[in-house]
Length: 276
Image (cartoon, rainbow, N blue to C red):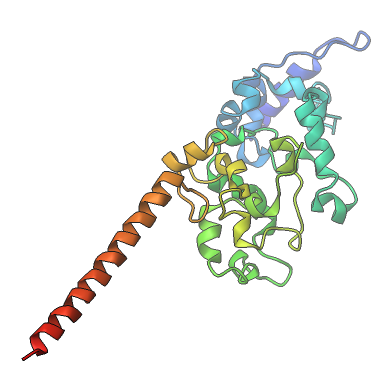
């Protein structure tokens, strides 16, 4: 980073007169980008501009960083928490479920939202691919303390590799609960003992995958109905249509009757041929 640029930026920020507690200034993003566009200072401004905070909420750096930037290097300053802005029922429910998550139980305090949802790059789950969503978990859980990989730790599952490649971690490590908002239950992370181990948890018509289909695959969307599942998604044991089931059974029955009839005719003809 050019020292002259750092001094110039520091001078710009420090030049405001000190006349009591001033209103938080609006610092144009390019002023921040002059330094924080540097890879060592960690903010990728292209990704930030694609985030929900910048793109939809039209937020800039100074909306959260409202003080502490008058001198370089910056002093640590208190920043608003997610619930300071996101205070609706959905986010309060998420906050409540986080306190029942295994992350809270093990650490004694909730994980900050930013541990999974990067403040600078956060996007709605409906815009994220399966790989992006799983990356939030894999960032910490790629290997355990013994150095075992995800596949090794899930070796109890007969098709572990297939599921790890095609499903999200929360599909097994959370569970829908009656009366709980969908975004909230997906934040109550279960321990490995409480997570899904039975095939029918997902592979059944009433399984929980209806609540997760917006969160798996690389083309996430809305919460699918059973009709949507039939048209757009196949999961053995879960996606079914009664009319097709009856038609399939009828086809099997006709096939068996045809085979039995053919065998019976062969037996009758064989007996006729043996008669003198």
